[in-house]
Amino acid sequence: MEAETARWGLTFSRPSDESLLVRLSGSWTVEDRLPSAAEVARQVESDPGIRRVTVDTQDLTGWDSALLTFLIRLKDQCSRSNAVLDEEGLPPGARRLLALASEVPEREGARKDEGREGFFTRVGKSALATHESAREMLTFVGEATLAFLKFLAGKASYRRSDLTLTMQECGFQALPIVSLISLLVGMILGFLGAIQLSMFGAEIYVADLVGIGMVRMMSPIMTGIIMAGRTGAAFAAQLGTMQVNEEIDALETMGLSPMEFLVMPRMVALILMMPLLCVYADLMGILGGAFVGVGMLNISVTEYAVRTQSALSLTHFWIGIFQAVVFGALVALAGCLRGMQCGRSASAVGDATTSAVVTGIVAIITATAIITFVCNVLGV
Image (tube, rainbow, N blue to C red; front, side):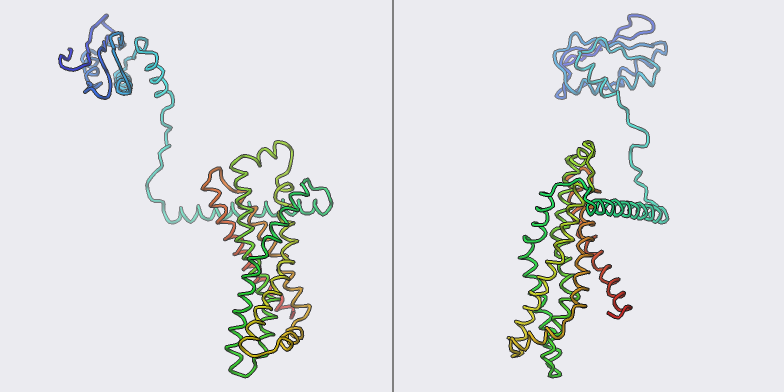
């Protein structure tokens, strides 16, 4: 049974009653129209006594993946017919590739079930994921608190140079963007107040509106949001990249706590810098309101300054500072948490950065609502 026009050859012989010899010759490449393994299967099925199939490839002049495909299918056919394929006559390279192809079969259940999950299944998975996320968050906050207490006791393992560098990045380098945003927010408050108060001839109270609004509420919130988008995202990206490069695992191997060495300096730096940035934002916001008051409402600089001084009190100032400290801690925790939870890929770093910004902003707004409610209850 040999093809006369093809460049390949396929013949059969019976060395014994229980064996079948398959002799391959010529070129067995993808460029040739090769026979199917079913032809060998028909020879095996025609005689149920065949228990061994031997392949002779001494006359092969060339082969590639086409031969390997033929052999894989032949091996499957022999398995279904309770026959054994003798691979001794194969080229060494083909024998190794055949062994590699059949060594790791597909695991049962490895393919994903494309069926649509039920509503209650999705709800249950979401509830479990939320519970696990809350547990991880509480664990992280607890570990960060312990690391901060060790810092206060002088027992934390960290580098002072890292703390100093992080304070510079969180403080001095953030002044330009804080200046711009605070100045514009102060001007916006001034515009809104000028439009409404001019209807009652009470333009001078623009100074009260801008001063109290900036010092008590807007400066801490806007500074916190700026730091969430700027510094919180940077923290998540830095720690996420370290997670991808397995640097955090290396720290643990060396006996260093990632919470003390990485998270604690970032948290302390942001807690220390946020009140200073908030005070600076207060000044820039009041200056923005003064531009509107002096430029639009013909209020003198002295009158605006005196009115602002009389409207403000230390209560408003300390409430703003307290909020700035809380927002600094929340932004640092959100950024470091998402960075430590980052996966081991580049896309995971991007997801962690986005999640850090969202988590930080949501935490700031939630904390603002709680602090405002408490202050209202206390009457301050």
